[in-house]
Length: 300
Image 1 (cartoon, rainbow, N blue to C red):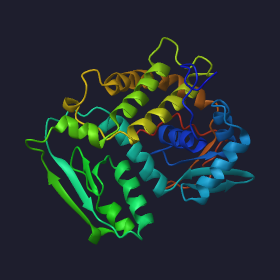
Image 2: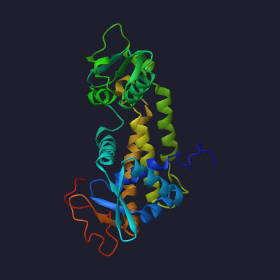
Image 3: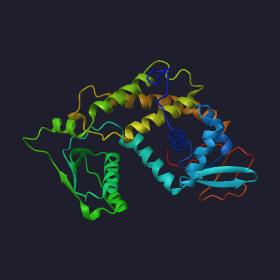
Image 4: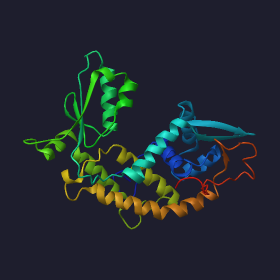
């Protein structure tokens, strides 16, 4: 069946699915998960044992996971780097959202002119600006529809002395709606939201998935990918039927519906040990510490 068919999940890299799983079931719980548990969970997502093991190894090599060994078993937990990435994702999903109802008119304006020989730095800066929600108005002139602090980006790329940043407001005769269409690929973004709705806004989403755990992880991985590339333009500059509004509603409704069935399934799958502030000694217990049981002192 083609990937455009609503029964098929959106194509996802194993690492995207892995990060989604870790954010949903490990973040904030001081847990490391047995590699065999990852294999069992990801088999439900159609990811092979080899691909799962390779993904775990690559993420550990990149500082996104840390290994702990108990006897012959290897467990994988979060690192400060992966915790920061996952926390950012949770904020975008549950706090920031995809729909910007802000009535303010402040924009962030970024201007730069780099030497021709700095091709790599220019590409990296453009990539980081897109990630931060900017669109290109002209070559070397980028805008974002809110206050965006790019100090860390400039520090990381060592471009602080080559980039100028302003807070600005459009004024006549500037046509702000036309400006938005010029700087951002609105049709491409709208089509991605429509594709999400074709898959999920239906009576039985992803019918070939084995269970609601697989559905939730597929859906959330796709949603995270969507909103991470959405500049969150104010709705007053967009069409009244902007599909992100319906897509966000569908996502939250299904996420809530899948939550309890997913945790019940995981309670029989996950073998975990405690990490972080808690002592690792004796943490395995009977070999089945459940990530589905959230500590009471962990923020929801």
